[in-house]
Length: 294
Ligand code: G1P
Image (cartoon, rainbow, N blue to C red; front, side):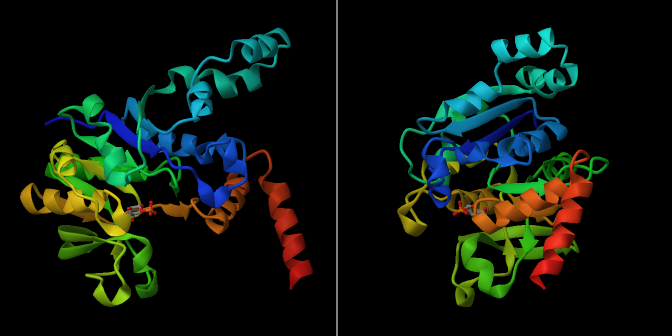
């Protein structure tokens, strides 16, 4: 059986919810403390054994590629000034993984963005990570993508992460219809993109982490525009579930939706509270303003 060495990360959106900053800075480069949020997603994939990252990009996102390239002038300056600790923070990035950029030439939907990777991924199974969703796991535990890869390796079936959401939240997500296999493992029978609560098949949502057999591309190729006139990944997943099999697992980890302002700020606070350099000061500051606000 093939193991997962490739991950696809769609990063082609305009990030309109974060205008004006996203006018010139891709939303994937917005920082969580001192690292671009995309790097956390890439770290999650690399921890799962991924070597090749296929970034689906739109126009004007050159800063992402530059970030994973050598920065000669800066590295030279840091070396000359013997700032080795700072140099170590950037030097590894150029060899951290192979970044392969693919252009999505038209914004036709997530299913279309993922399909844009088919030439590069070929017949290999792959992980798909939506970078708006940041998944924190403790350093000693498997990353969320790693949890999916372990399940894929054990059961040889495409596997997606799922989480239970409130009934009034289902219209924000792809929602799965399931047969329960055990307390954290489900067989996916159907997938509905952003249903109204009254039509939702369950409260189990898709938080943007997937491991797919390459057959998903065959189904995406023929997927017509669906919800909101977009080519939806979930419509391709319905075919995959019904023809090849698809399972969903609940996962261990803390999820942040950094695609909206509140989730982004929450993630920044939590990552600051974990950051060895500033965590004590940040904690003291939060306690101080909490007192002032109450
Ligand atoms: C996309 C997917 C949806 C998934 C969600 C997770 O929607 O279409 O199925 O649940 O990501 O973040 P978006 O949030 O991009 O509209």
